[in-house]
Amino acid sequence: MIAVRRVPELWRRFDVTVRDLPLGLLILAGSLVPAFHNHGTQLGGLPGRPFDALAVVAVALQCLPLAVRRRWPVVCLALVSVGFAVDQLRGYHSFAGTAVPVALLSVASHLERHRRATALLFSAAYVPLAVALYRLGSGAESPGEFVLYYLALALPWGMGSWLRSTRAAEAERRRLVAEHTRTAERARIARELHDVVTHHVTAMVVQAEAARYLTAAPDRLDQALTAVTDTGRRAITDLRHLLDLLNPDYGTEARMPAVSRLLTLVEQTRRAGQPVEFTEEGTPAESTGSGDLVAYRIVQEALTNALKYAHGSRTSVQVHHGAREITVEVSTDGSGSRAGSPAGSPGGSGRGLAGLRERVDVLGGDFSAGARTGGGFVVRARIPARSPS
Image 1 (cartoon, one colour):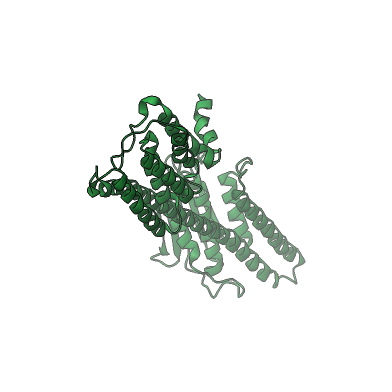
Image 2 (cartoon, one colour):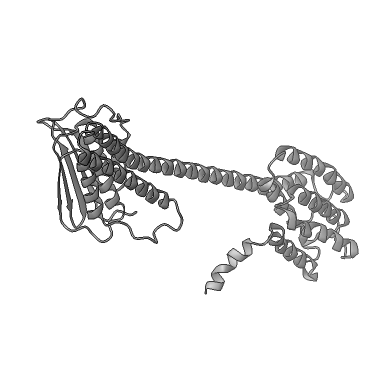
């Protein structure tokens, strides 16, 4: 069964000439069958003639060039047309005349340039052929029959043009989808980098600024510098994890459990001088898809903003793991202020909360962020627990 399924894939590996040759051979074989002699296209009313060596040449000229109908469509049509002219002028009327519409369809479908000029050239070549057949047939067919045949040949040309336009539209659609996918992926990576870099760098800046005032207390200065070092190491670890996401072999290594990740994040913020109360309820599911990561990013971004804009203010982090969803709430009292934060704290671009909202919306959850009534700021999110990664 597997071998049968692989046949189309193996067939597509062959050169296009090899794949197009069987159709020409099939028409060639049918044209040489004695029962089909003089039962093909009859144009001009010439009496039928028995097959001879020239008939075989004419049949071959009409059939074998179909092997290159996609690689060299104009060459194919030219050879087929010569064979068709010999076929009709000699009165063989072979079944190989069916190769003409096939060649026309291929030219209209696969010729990239000069399609209009090609159509005009072959239309002009049809005129002397029609005149010669009309004279040789002694007027057995009216001029209207030649016009009708020409219009009939316009049908495969139109079908080929339609196929070409459809193929071009599909290629453009795929290009736009690929471009949109690349843009979305770049935006996703930019959000991840923003979350990782902004949080850790903000914590390091706050810790380094605090260390400037601890020169008289060596023990506390050593603790502050150790905190800066640990934060830098965690930043490197998170960046490596982000780069691993771009690795095709990603997923073979175990990830840090959600509880440990949040506790580490809260502890890091505390060491930067931010009083944080952390409460976690429920048991995290074994597999939460992207929900776990989004919840982590929400807490990370909210704590980063607390460090930048309300340094020293009491901050509360509440995470609840339910059977179907994860709820996160991070609130900061209004006792702190932007002015109370260290002078070196970096400002914000506004991308963090907007990126979080996009993440939650994609997963089908709810996200809100804004000032509290009594002062301060609060971020709330409801995230489906089993959102696809």
